[in-house]
Length: 171
Image (tube, rainbow, N blue to C red; front, side, top):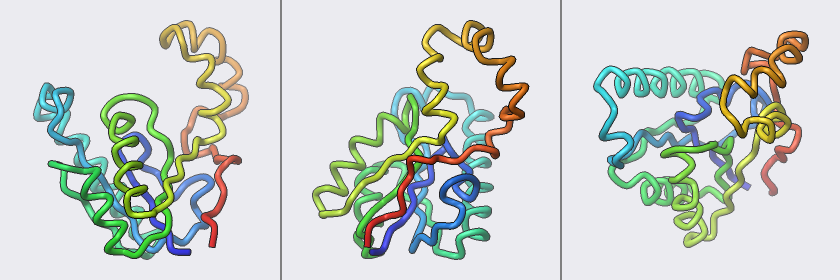
């Protein structure tokens, strides 16, 4: 079946890791919406976020050789549903956002896609699934528990992981 990727600011490197050899039909990008968290950000921070998303869009287009589209920030979940329908997708796949605006948006996207009969699959990178349970008390306790092991493994670069749990979309 046809599938597409959701690219969001919480994971801007679809071309690295488990998804690198997948061949999506399209990639949809949501930008920060008009929620209170985004509205309270300064202009420089917002400019940085948009710059990172534009860079991610360029890299994804170069790597996957498919259409990459920025979706309406005013109603990103509705736009994602329309985008998936327009591209005749059977499934939308993404790395799961952790917290914040993207994580808040994920259930809304799920509802929009489900209303159109489109599957929604979220995956975690292997290092996220392995280490998230340790990240409950802030950065310094987390680093104290895992930092030395991370340094030894050479796994500090987010480009080195892959999601062993991710499955290719079903036909």
